[in-house]
Length: 254
Image (cartoon, rainbow, N blue to C red; front, side, top):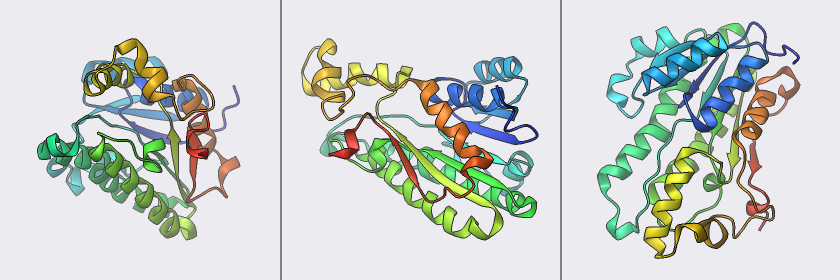
């Protein structure tokens, strides 16, 4: 594979599994040195060793611990920042735990802001940077029972656009990748949760809930997301900024 990212340093949050793991592998295969940032120390370390990268064990939901000094040491030399870490909670708004709402906003919106804030000075100094935010179709569409997730993803789409406008004069681009349901452990857990909240069998969740709006009736593969992220990180995408790339099988075309 062409080493289009040779010499670049990347950091991927939630990088030890699912979409994050696929992104780590895709960037590393193109020559980048990748830091796998994850709360799961063992998995992050194992993947980093496999791809010749580094690992950073971090609880991004603990935003008070993400001080300027701590982040500067990790983000200062990062050329490619991929904000991917996320969790899901499913409940109707009257039953939605405010603590869960705050947790998701901290992890999926406040933490990306803090990481972008820490990475930009170095990117500006070097005249190159790629901020890539893995949002979701829920960054541009809503679904019931996902108040926190939809709110965080919509916010991240906005943050990404502001980053693009501010970074344009400094060689920094900022974009979102917005997949539909991806074949990951988190989605597999959602199948169970969706079955409970809708009162239907688990085997009917994909056809009746998750894929009803998609023209292509299958889950997105993690490697497909990784490939798009790698392109956005490359020199070929230098004029692509402030955009959101849907990868949802046609869901958002409706």
